[in-house]
Length: 129
Image (cartoon, rainbow, N blue to C red):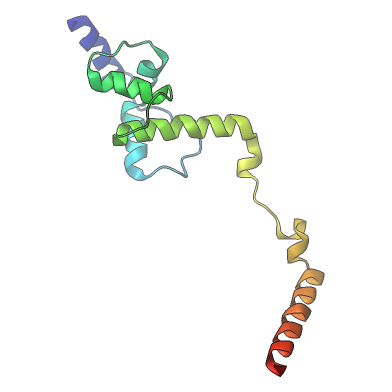
């Protein structure tokens, strides 16, 4: 048991800051700090490199595997991190493409003129009543 504790401490202290390899826009400052500090340890628990020692760690692994809903801030953070990575893997670069207004006919000059005509016509009809 003592060897397991030392192995856990190694992942917590000797690995350095965890590199967050996804877009961090959805994470709060607190969540980013948690990921940087505990990310190597979370990953080792999730991947089975480290066996859980405590009940809390067993519950954490269940959350990571989708068998239970997250409860603690650490569970939520890792759950969101894994989810974000999955989405980025599935969607690719489309998440980072900024839509351009000229690609959408709703925002074209002709579309604006058409909308104005509809609005003015509706207002005029309502005013006459």
